Length: 137
Image (cartoon, rainbow, N blue to C red; front, side, top):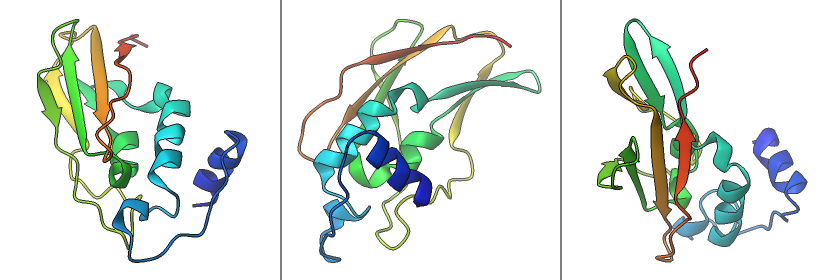
């Protein structure tokens, strides 16, 4: 939590106390601030990894902010955003926990050069489409 709080402060966001009964504010901040944090941290939304002959694309960062996201749409290699990443259910008692067994998709090695992602927030607004390029290491 200290890291998230620091990230919010570095981004110029204030962290306001919120009522415990407001699920939209489960992460201790209003939904607008969650959107701002996701905007500031968009470079971390997804990450690539080569592992045992497969290409993995991780959605861990988005899983950690799932209480502030309704939907995650994505498309591969410049294709349409016609796939959906199923986020875990938000647990207001532990909103940033990533408990999903596989917070990634598995693809054949070298099959994906890019992934484009768009978020839909609880207020119905959409993030800009962000495209992430695979950079082998």
